[in-house]
Structures are given as C-alpha cells and as structure tokens.
Length: 348
Image (cartoon, rainbow, N blue to C red; front, top):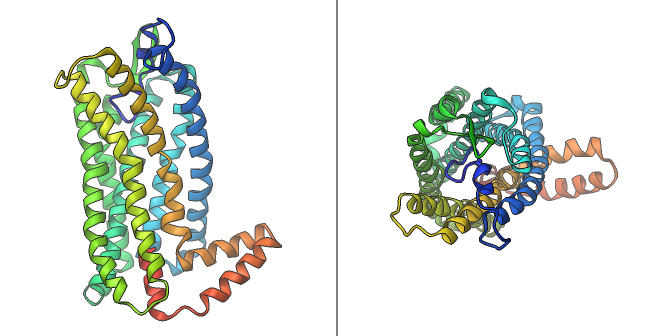
C-alpha cells in the first residue's frame, strides 16, 4: 500500500536505495515491512474475523428481538468484516513487495477496504449519537427508534460509505514502478490522493472524535445522576472508547499529513525524514487497523444483553467452563435494576 494512500502501499519505492543497512534506509523499511506488516495483518485478520463473525451470528440468531442498537452492532461488525477480508491481499502485497492480483482486484480490494473503513466509522458515529439521544433526550426520541428508521439509516450509511470510496473503485489500478507492480493511483490521477488524505483525516478522525467528545461529555453527567451501581464502570468504558479511538487512529493520520507536507515541500525535503516518515506511516497504519478487533469488545461483549446471548451460544459449543461462566453471568444479570439495564443496553 502507498504511503500516501490508506488503501495500498507502493512498496516499489522501498527498493530504490540499496545502500548500507541503517534505521533510516529504504532497504531497512522494506525489510521491516516484509516482516512486521504481514505478521500484524494476519493477527488482525484472525482476531477481527472471529470477534465480528460472532457478533453477526448472535444478532442474526436473535433478529426477531433486534432494536436500533442491535442493527448498528450488526452493521458495524459487517463493516469490520469487509475491512478485514481485504487484509490477506495486503499481507501478500507486503510480503512479496509487489501487487500480483491484477488490475480488477486492485480496484475491488482498494474500494472494499475504504468502504469497510468508512462504514465502520459512520456506524460508530451513529451509535454514539443514538446513545446521546436515548440517555439525554430519552422521552423525545423513543417513538422514532423504529425498525423502519433503522433500516433507512443503515441503507443511507452504506450508500454514503460507497460514495466516499468511489475514487478507489474507479481510479486505482495496477502500476509499474522500478520493475515492480503496485496498486495505487496512476500519475495522471494523483490528485485523488489529496481527496483520500482529506476524507481519511476529516471523516475518519476529526468528525468522529468531535462527535464522541461532544456526546459523551453530555452523557457522563447524566449517567452520574442515575441510581445505578454500574455507572462508574460505564463512565470508565466511555473514556476507554474515546481514548482507544484517538490513540489508534491519530498517529497514523498525523504522520500521513506530515508526509503530505513533506512531499509538497511545505516542510523541508530531507532524505532521512522521508524514510522515517515512510516507516512511521506503515507502522501506525497497521496499528490503527487493530481497532476493528476492539470494536466487538467495546461495542458488543461488554453489553449485558449481548453478553448473555454470546455465552448461551458458547455454552453449546464449549461445555463445562463456559457453563459455569454463563451461570455466574446469569446470576449477576438477574439483579440488575431497570435503570441499569437501560444504561447497559444503550451505552454499551
């Protein structure tokens, strides 16, 4: 995947300087990427697939009892699954140092990668806004949280994600540089890299972070006034949601922006800086991808209702220890008050 484009790295650039091995050398970046990226991508694929597939299965199994929160969880998991399904291709890309799947797959995988990324972000925004409305303005929005509204909102989010990702479906193609094949925007369409940088930074970080901070800053005081023994744990969870999102995605977006400034000579042109930025973008992007593994934990498994359903499923698959865990969880859930149940359902 290219350092300027979140959909694909152009590894051909790492082969241009075969000089001595040093931390700031292109060959060092190449060697590091060929080990680090496939390893982390493979781990993210396995954990992300297992966690999100379980969410999809549990929601589908109890689809007759689904509400807006369940539908958002379901689509968030689908978004993360679409995202992680592209990682095996990028794992091979990073390992081989070139793209070997052809032009059609280049466009399909790049576009699917972006669609999964943006739809995941958008559904997290929707879930944050839903929590805010149902906790801070519960009486005003209850009648609007219908199945029809949920389906309409879901279709809109997927269409919006597809629209934002269209340049990747249309303009990315198999390129050839330094005798190696890449998957990137061709030179005549490099203007779309600025579009990609803008959408990734603004739609992928700035807007969701502002929504989270704004909504949760109103939600937390409301939770504190509720008579529930779980409010302190929920406040900590909310803080973890915001902090995890920021720590995982902010470094990648910052380094991408610095790389853009360096390429446009807005900051000094320096070979060492360029090589270090290449390495930083590669590392921080791979780390940011681990967020799709955390989504099932943050947004699903900590919820009381979803946890009971997941344990019921695991009880059938893995008897013994899981049965004891399920019984313990059931006893705890049976003493939850009504206010705590509402808080658990919509905050987590």
